[in-house]
Image (cartoon, rainbow, N blue to C red):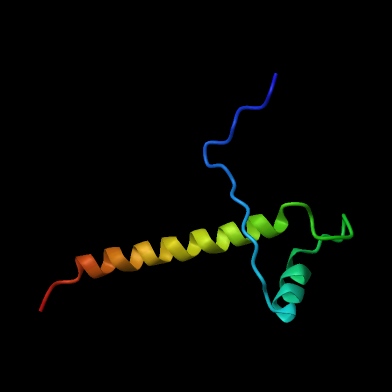
Length: 70
């Protein structure tokens, strides 16, 4: 039986990053157990950062709406 399709399907994006940035991220994501950066670690890392960015932006917009107008 085939796997059901994901509701939020992935879309491939290609980006270029500075070597120094890639090195820092790979040091952060490196797994001693696997001896490499685990499969999917980059995607998980970036999705978490992007989600945090939008959550922070949404909170800031909500706070602005709640500020009393002068």
